[in-house]
Image (cartoon, rainbow, N blue to C red):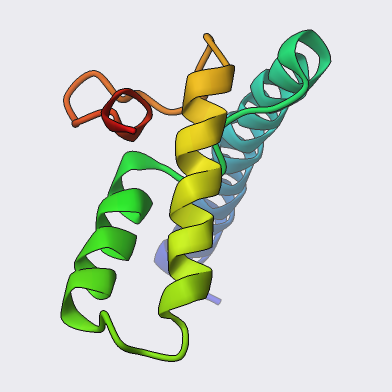
Amino acid sequence: MSLSAIIVMLASIVALWGVAGYALIVSMRHEERKLSLLHSQGDFEPYSPRAFRDLEHWLMQHPDSEHAPEIREWQDRQRQSLQRNPRRFYDWSSDDDPGEAA
């Protein structure tokens, strides 16, 4: 095996473990934050701002779907959670806060 192949293989291994380690650390920090919110206030908003917008967009396109009542229930749960909990997991500062609109 040539020296350049060994170098590429070692660099690939280091890069793979580096990215995987970073992803694990970021994921664990998010989970710690969620857990602290659960301990302090018992709940946090189930959907991100983007997911909430996607639900609204889907509902506007399919208002008579058989799944529409379930989507509306999910939206209501999100709004209730946003009204009930002062601390948020997701950043709602750049988006319309559905908890304030309800």
